[in-house]
Length: 108
Image 1 (cartoon, rainbow, N blue to C red):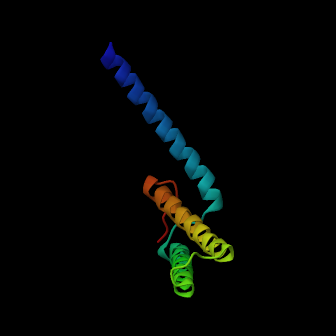
Image 2: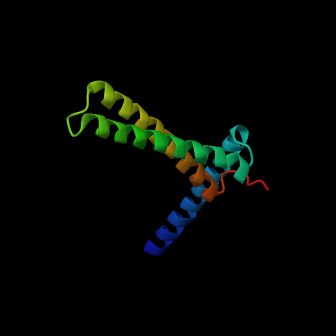
């Protein structure tokens, strides 16, 4: 009986996985072009630039404050840089995920 339930569960989960894959392919194909190195690279470069801006801001604060607590304005700028970097990084990670799952078409 337990084996039958496990078989049914696995079959059910497989069907759900296939339905999710179909849904993702349909939806993402409407909003994303086929993935190529040429159209992924600008996003990767953007993430790198934003990471650089974030870290540069942190170094700028550290140098100017010489160990003192940063001002509220400095923290606000640093936070904004971090948020922009993290959002871009998460978008890139989401793109890698959909490529790995086969949700998007791969171009030449």
